[in-house]
Amino acid sequence: MKQASNRWQMSKNIAMNILAFAVQLIINFYISPIVVSGIGTEAYGFIGLANDFTSYASILTSVFNSVAARFIATAYYNNDYESANKYFNSLIVANLAMAGILGVVGTVIVPNLDTFLEIPASIRFDVKLTFALVFGAYILQLITTVFTTSTFVANRTDIQGMRNIINQIVRLGLIVIFLNFISLRIYWIALATLGAGVVVAVMNVSLTKVLTPHISVNLKKYAGKQYVFNLAKSGGWMAFTSLSNVLMHGLDLMIANLFIGATEMGLLSVARSFPNQFGAVIGTLAPLFTPVFVAFFAKNQIDELVKSVKKSINTLAVLLFVPICGFIVFSTEFYTLWQSSLSAEEIRIIATLSTVTLLQSYFNATTASMAQLSVVTNKLKIPVLVSLGCGVFNFALVMLLIHVTSLGVYAIVLSSTVIMVARYVIFNSVYAAWCLGVPKKTFIWQAVKTWLSVPVLLAIMWGIKCLLPVSTWGGLILDAAICAAICYLIMALLYSRQPIVRLFQKIFHKS
Image (cartoon, helix red, strand yellow):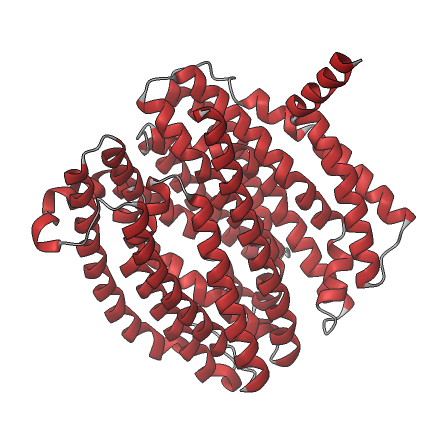
C-alpha cells in the first residue's frame, strides 16, 4: 500500500509540475510577440538579459541554498526537529545578509547600465527600471526561499507545482492588465513578476506551517554560525556549479550584446525562450525523484535506488521526447505564425538557433535524474569541477569562434550544445554509477535505449508534416495533435510496458 501511495504521489508531483510548465509556456507565448512587434527585438532581449543578471547573483546565494533542502529534510526524516530548525533559521539569517549585499550592488549597477551595455537611447530608462524591478523580485525570492523547502521535506512537490501555477497565473493577469490597459513597456513585465513573487512568498510561509509543523521561525533560539558553515561547506561547491551555469548559458545575451549587436541579442533571446523552458521543466522534474532517492539511500537500499533511477530515465524520456521532437520539426512554421512581424530571414535564424539549442534536451532529460545522485550521496566536488571546466571551455570557445569565424550568433549556441551533450552522455551516467558503487554502465544503457527512439519520432513527425503542410494555427494544432497521439503511443509501448502487459494478462485470463 505504501509503495502504491508513493507511486501515486510521484504521479501527482510530475503532473502538477508539467501543468506549471504549460502555464509558463502560455505566458511566454503571449508576451513575446507583443513586445517584439510593439517595441522591437532589442527590447525583448533586455528582458532576458535582466533575468540573466540574477543568475550572476545566484553564484553567491547558491552557497547556502543549494543543499539546504537536503539538510533540513534529512534531519526532519530522522525526527531531529532541533537540527531541522537550526538549519532552517540559520539559512534565513544568511539569506538576509546576502539580500543586503545584493541590494547595495544593484543600486550601483542599475543606474550605470548604459556604460557597459549597448542600450538604444529610446528604451534606456525602460531597461534600467526593468533591471531594478528584476533585482527587487530576486531579493524577495531570496529572503523567502527557505520557506519553499517544506514541499520537498514533505514530498509534496505537487503543491510546489500548484504554487508555480498560481504564481504564473497572477503574473499573466498583471501583464495583461499592464500591457493592454496602461502602456506597452518592458518594465511592466518585471513589475508583474515582482507582484506575483509577493503572492508566492505569502503562500510559502503558510505552506511551511501546514506541511512542516515542527519547523518555526525563531532566529534567536535556533540560528547559529555552525549550521551556516555546514551549509556553506557543502553548498560552496554548488556555487561553482552556478558559476559554471553562468559561463555556459548566462553570458549568452551579454556576449551577443557586446560583440555582435543588440538586434542579434534580441533574436537569440526569442530563439532560446522555448528551449530554455524545456530546460526549466527538466530542471523541475528531475529533482522530483530526489526525495525517493534520498529515502532509499538513507535505508541503504541500493538495488531499489538503482531501479528507481532507471524508471526515472524512462519516465522523463516518455514525457519529454515527443514535445522536443515536435518543436524541432515544426520550429519554422511555429515561429512564422508566432512572430509574424519578423522577416523570413529572422525567422530562419531564430528557428536554427532554437533547434541547435534544443538538441541538448534529449540528453539532459535522460541524465538529469542521474545527476541528482551526487546531491543524494553528498559527492559534489567532482561534478562541480567538471561543470566549471565545461563553463570555462565554453566561454573560451565562444570568444574564439566569434573572433576567428563568421558564425556570429550561431557560435554561442553551437559551442554550448557540443560541450553539454558530451558532458551529459559521458560524465553524468558514469559518475552516477560511481556514486552508488555500481558498474559504470548501469545507467548509460538505459539512456541509450531511450535515445534510439528519437530518429523514429522525428521521421514520423516529418512524414505527417509533409502529408499535412502547415500554414495556419489550426493546421499546426492538427498536426501537433496527430503527432502527439501517435508518438506518445509508441513511447508508451516502448518504455512503459507494465500497464500494457497487465492489460493483456487480464484479457487472456478472461478468455
